Structure formats: structure tokens, C-alpha cells
Length: 252
Image (cartoon, rainbow, N blue to C red; front, side):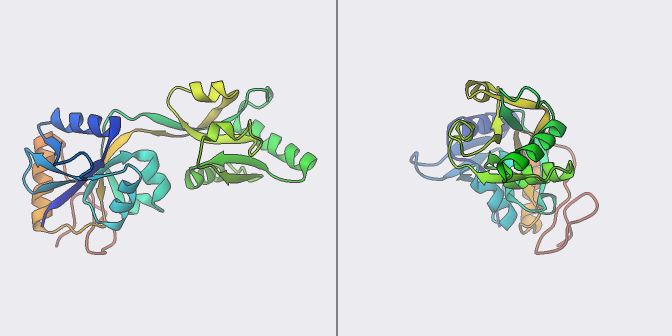
């Protein structure tokens, strides 16, 4: 058996991932044609490279079809229910930084915090007879964040396009979206809430708890982590067993 490592298949994320591994003594390279989603690993025995979209990697980790994967920490948390039972964070990688935040129209000068938003949502419903709409692609993360802060008088609306434009297009009153600099939000006359940071995301190396961790996969993982200078073995699981409580992968 081979340890399968999933990394982003194109663009800057792929380039930065390749550079991150190279700096730690492991060379990743694409095999064959540009459209071929396979690759090779040099510097670590028993490891196969699988090229996937960043959005596919959390699902493949959760299903146990890859052992390791590089993707945004926001995507794992959004895609996988009870994500910590399905994946373990091995290493933040220091690139791909983006914040998931709540933003409101800049004209709402009296709404600066979540408490203000809660009051505005109650007033909005009293006036309009419906709940204040928040456009987002991150339903799970936003819902959990607001629930933990006892904010309930809102409706999440799905955004598959440019979330920042939904307020201008009158399909939402506020947004919850990923931003790196905030410039796009400001260009659309939106303002971040002072305490509206939901998650600070970055590219992260994850381990699948549900993948099969037999002897060869364990040996490949130990060799890879040792080569890269990542100390210790992560908690994990395999073959449908419940998550291990202590350090180390479970016994076969």
C-alpha cells in the first residue's frame, strides 16, 4: 500500500505547496501533461502524489481516500461535520491566509459589533416582517459562530457568485465572506464588524483519521514527517475505529 498525499492541482496554491515541501527536503512534481492529475514524490519513500482541487481535498480526507491533504483550514471546517473526528491538523503552512468575516453596509454607522447586529436584525424584522439576510458560501461556519453568540434573528442565503455584490443587488443585507485585505469589501461599501472574525484560515497539512493506516502507511508517514522535521506522530484512526485519545496512530 502507498500513502496518498493530496495537494492543490493548479495555480498559486499548488506552487506554494510544492515550494513548502521542497524547503523541507521533499520534492513534489507533476507527472506528464499539464492536465494529468498525478505526480511524483522524491525524498520520501512510499508516498504518492494526488493532484485535486482545494475544494475536493476535504471530502477526500473525510472519506479516507487520501491519507494526507493540503487545503484551507476554512474548507475542512466547512465541509466536514465534526471535522476533528475526521481529520487532524499536522502543520499550518504559512500561506493562503484569508479571514472569514461578517461585514455590513458602511452606511450602517450604528452597527459596529455583533451585539449591534443582533439589535439591527430585530429592528429589521419588526419593520420588514422578515429576517435579515446574510449571504455566504460558508453556512456551517457562520451558523455555528452566530449560534455560539446567541444571535438567531437572521437568514442565511446561499451565494455562489460574488458575495460582496449581494448587498448592492438587494439579495442580502449583510455578508459573511473570505477576505485577505478587505479591499473588495470596501470597494462594495461594506465594513467589517469589530468582533466579526469567524475564522482565520491558511493552507494546512491535514491527516485523515478515516484512511487505512496499515504498517506501510505508518512507515511512510513516519519517514515523511521525519524528513520534514515535523516531530511526533499525530492522533489518528483507521478501519472505522473511533478516534484515538492519545498520541500516535492506532494499532493495526
